[in-house]
Image (cartoon, rainbow, N blue to C red; front, side):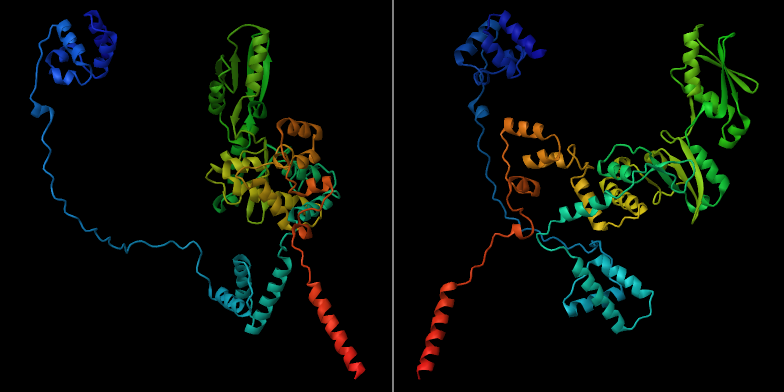
Length: 505
């Protein structure tokens, strides 16, 4: 605002707009211009404009010494070259060891592998060492077992240029055709349905947001898992309980009110008090009604006297949430190997893991998307492997776990859980023909034609479509070895001539 006022004030005194803007931009005010030397003003405007300005604002021309305008050059000090200081080596720093030191048995196995020139991954090596620690074997017996494990491992190592994706697809797809279409199965837990078989496998590979029958297996900490009363209390606090589950809700049309009669046995079983019900009703935002306690009953009176409003109040009161976790409709207790386990119909992993009594390391859900959102992509990958393996095992079908691991890796390799379909992996392929071969052929080809996409024919499907060798296995090799034919002919002629000479003699 100060800049604008200065410009307007100078223009009113007859100064041009251009000069006024220049002086205002330099930070001058009219009072400052009257005290500013002429030489400083001419830095921003011409001398003619400066003289005209001083006349119009009624200020005298003030001069300053040249010594002030052009200060003497400072005396150059001799720079003393400073020697670079030597850094002291820190002795308090330690490099953290991410890999634990090998045990004595592991070192023995490693030494034997070095002697034979063999290799085993660290996980197989450590598992083998653990087995040896629990077995009394001689050195020769151990070495023989190690050699057998190496042979077995090398037999299972994938060959270069082998089409791992096709093998995995066949490995999972062929048993998939033999799976029954059984949708629901009690899985040893009464009253809780679990989707298994082919529908469950489809859910996993499609990366559905929520499974058709979400379920949680909640393990409790050892201090409470063996006490049935504590487990019942925890199960009651987990299971979503509405007012209709623990009370009779009636409509009193004569008095235009809702009467709530809590069931004492159900309330005691759930550990709910009358005050809890009243507080839950008061928290309902939609319920703008008065709540009165009359002995062992509650009366809710509608704010408006109308049948429509009474019906609305009845529905709100009936579905009012008293306690429990959102999304979990039922909790069932069953005895496990190490104590009681709580099985739930419905899933809410984030809220369940917030409970102190829950064993976080063993509690799981069958919702892969929920695991991804709460625990991350690595946990989601492990869940895909576990769920797919369990589904196939339940049907009595044997599939190599590495093939399932490959599918899980493809679904999660970019930090997100993608479906194997046109909305996920297949739809993101760079090849137009590969996308068109999967689904909605005409739409893919039309879009590619409009945009002008180029297909480099790198994959399997597109090469099969155009009728040329697939670039995997033997098709991935372009090198051809041709033996020297000329040399072979010369040597053959020499041998033949020597033979003739010998016969002539």
